[in-house]
Image 1: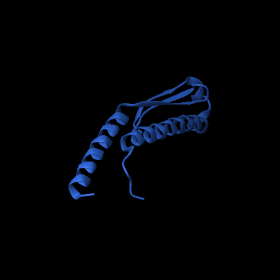
Image 2: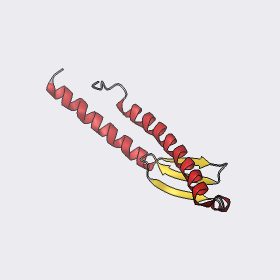
Image 3: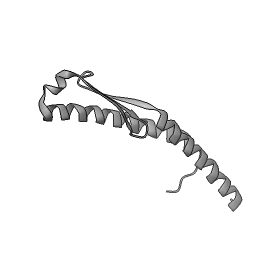
Image 4: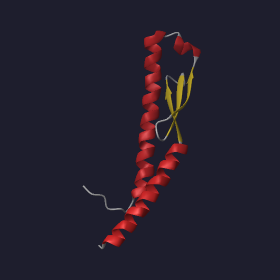
Length: 99
């Protein structure tokens, strides 16, 4: 493979990855804990977009509320991780990656 062809492939890959990053920034996932007592909206780039906590969560005390919020965060992060894998996988599909 010649250098010009390699540079062209790199440029195409860079454009696809940039488009994927933009898509992730505009995507939203929801993390839900305790039957909807806490809902976190997060972008595909892990940005916290919204946090909703039902009043009854606050009655659990600081430690209990923190556990519910963390569970919702972990659910949102897991969904964002899956979305990132999917979107970036589509962007780099067919491109040989170094090992």
